[in-house]
Length: 391
Ligand SMILES: Cc1cc2nc3c(=O)[nH]c(=O)nc-3n(C[C@H](O)[C@H](O)[C@H](O)COP(=O)(O)OP(=O)(O)OC[C@H]3O[C@@H](n4cnc5c(N)ncnc54)[C@H](O)[C@@H]3O)c2cc1C
Image 1 (cartoon, helix red, strand yellow):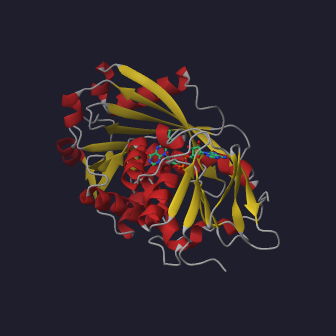
Image 2 (cartoon, rainbow, N blue to C red):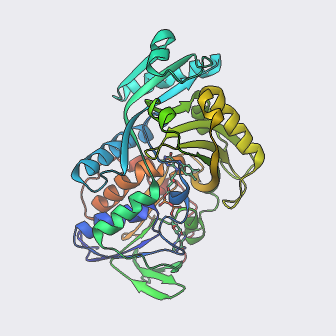
């Protein structure tokens, strides 16, 4: 039986989830080896928008987890670890059509039911609170107490604070299992075998190959844009904008490998730099190396329709990242089925910046035999039967 307090751990993947897991392990005095096939924050974490937000979460376990996730960001900012890297602001979910208004009203009810502080704004209230918003906006729900963080900055903070050096260019190739026991002894990598008391897989889309989960995990591309600095317009936005259609695109996105789909939902985030981050798409195809003019045109058209002042800004860059989605829309967090000392944390789709730190903390609490801060039972990997753990 595994000790409740392991002395050594291997974490595979140095995105935000792996970095947070490594940080919380190190805080307990557990010796951590954090390996990455490429480099820290090289995948989704380095190509995300960064909304630390309950506003967009599906009601239920994701919304409850996000509440804890946002609270942890606030706590770590107050304690200094995330100071200056977590910008506190509201999210305004904006509806411009009948359909969006109906979705927004239902969502506002769910948010309020979960204990989130919201305010519904229409007419003169909306215009006075958000003067730069176009008259196209019929109503908005202000979700208080949210924030924004750049994924790679958070990874840097976590790694610097824990003194962990990522072993770059080290690809996990398979798990090593104790013959006849429900235990892992370590992992095989392109640089040789590593052993430890505990193994945590936080490898994003790389988890599919390691665990035979290609029927469960789906890569989902997103395209984002960054403008030049516009301090006056930036300062006049009291928070981020999320279109009602964003909620639709997140909830209605088809999972799995069936017909290619492209969901478009608008998010406009005024960054601390004075720039704007504008997104984005949800595409179950494509690669992270490319943006396409159709997506960029549509995102910009939607953005200017809601914030006309953006029309005069220059676009500085466009980029893309690939989320890891799970077919049932919930992440995989917990024990690898049949393995006492093997854990997985992946499949956060568009929510991993928000949920990364709280997930890392909760996995470590589970490893140490404590009750985790978030209820992990809805995310239990054992809900899927197709596990091909390579031993
Ligand atoms: C366009 C876009 C916008 C987003 N916007 C938001 C947002 O606003 N808010 C939010 O909360 N989330 C957002 N997300 C989602 C968020 O970025 C992800 O959920 C999160 O970064 C996932 O982190 P991760 O650590 O699980 O995975 P990743 O960041 O993908 O990290 C996995 C790491 O594992 C490594 N790896 C893979 N395979 C192996 C292997 N075999 N061996 C060793 N290492 C391996 C990779 O190199 C990588 O560094 C967005 C994502 C995208 C793409």
